[in-house]
Amino acid sequence: MDIKAKFEKLITDLQNSICGEIELLDGKEKFTEDAWTREGGGGGFTRIFANGNVFEKAGVNRSAVYGEVTPALAAQLKTKGSHFFATGISLVIHPFSPMVPTTHANFRYFELYDAQKNKIDSWFGGGADLTPYYLFEEDAIHFHKTFKTTCDQFDPSFYPEFKLHCDAYFNNTHRGNERRGVGGIFYDYLRPSENRNEEFFFQFSAACGKAFTQAYLPIVERTKSLPFGEDQKRWQELRRGRYVEFNLIHDRGTLFGLKSNGRTESILMSLPPRVRFDYDDNPKPGSREEELISVLKNPREWVNR
Amino acid sequence: MDIKAKFEKLITDLQNSICGEIELLDGKEKFTEDAWTREGGGGGFTRIFANGNVFEKAGVNRSAVYGEVTPALAAQLKTKGSHFFATGISLVIHPFSPMVPTTHANFRYFELYDAQKNKIDSWFGGGADLTPYYLFEEDAIHFHKTFKTTCDQFDPSFYPEFKLHCDAYFNNTHRGNERRGVGGIFYDYLRPSENRNEEFFFQFSAACGKAFTQAYLPIVERTKSLPFGEDQKRWQELRRGRYVEFNLIHDRGTLFGLKSNGRTESILMSLPPRVRFDYDDNPKPGSREEELISVLKNPREWVNR
Image 1 (cartoon, rainbow over the protein chains, first blue to last red):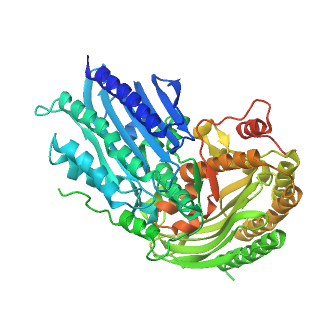
Image 2 (image 1 turned 180 degrees about the horizontal axis):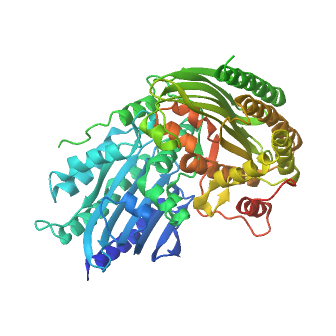
Image 3 (image 1 turned 90 degrees about the vertical axis):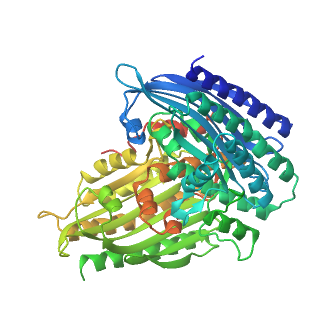
């Protein structure tokens, strides 16, 4: 099986296992699936979950698309080519309770070809990050530790580098460098080389994919029954507004998809279900809400390097 | 009084009169004002209204800013210069009832200077548009007719041109060319010339500014007591999601402001207070919701040219 087929099988299995685990934990609703095709080549399967016991909205999308490198894609890529192939899984989970963090993950593989259809470049990308509404240090530590343990099995330099990359990327610069959440890992342009072949990076992608539910679901189990009130729900909806701002203003994948005739509903499935935008709403000094903002503006080291 | 001072007086008066009329119609709440200064030169006054009887959130901002043309500004301008001066009023009104349309307007004046601070270019811009959640043809007609009457006093070619420009600009291209609303007028780069001096365009700006409340408030009066239920409120919140998408993905002013260290809270005061993002939510065939979408995708002529 070539690497493209292997990666597609990986994300198909991941989509099944992640959706299954979410359904099991939630206990009420099931995912529904929309299959879609892309004009220009390829398509995908978008699975959506709404109004469960624990999860208010979740989307798990996998796709394999290919075609010509358009001017919009060329502007985004750091490397030149005539045709491309891209496959990946992307997911966002929005719990109902403000005590339970939102999370996002994606794992992808990309190939680039010259005009004669010879493969001239390929790379792996991906990551996972956690967006709490209230800070529980043990949750941030657990999430980071899970991915550090996974990364360390491949290269001890991976976690520190990808953790920093994550903090730098998920950054609402227009909000005084307020990060989207407490981070995680983010990597891109991991290219096979003489020392590390594509099998190495395939195994790394598979390990990170497998780590995702181990990183996230125990946090959900721990926080899902914590009490909350209207004030906490309101704070969550305001913070979800920041999630919308990041995705629509800064996220390269979202903007690229929307401007290159991607499937809008699959791209914007990431947006939170209910959101507030109030003018200049700032948390009270010394509050738990202010504690969160402080950590978002000054990312911490959650595990020893 | 030079044109800069005249325009600033105009928008100061407009801010007062528009806020006063909104307060009068609402009957419950009052605007509060935040004065702010801009690092690099100038500042503004942001007035915010929240949780009234009729209006859920409204923002009326006026500013006068100046300074160096940064690379970000240079990329946005169609013309080259070393320093700039810009003054304008910008407002967004989000009513509580889904039967009452949202509206936006802005009126602005811009000057550009060379390195020796000689004025080398100047222009006027502005417009107003209406975003209903349910279509009432008479409202769209009234809104357009008011601005057509105003435009026609200056140049009969203005309304048809600015109406088309409005439909072309407020367009969610990523939603299959769904317009933000039923339009209005939008104009930019109106430059004084030998035939038409700056006084002509100043008077035009003033007339459009004055027309705004005449165009919008009668619609509010007519629709504010119409009955609605949870389904209509939900539809409004979904449509507000499209408003967020337009402002954060496409609106040049918003993106320029956010990426050039504008005052984020004053820029994003335009976002609706409560919003929903549900996956692939499509109105039923033959419904009033579908009727709206149809008009947004196929802009109509609301008044005879």
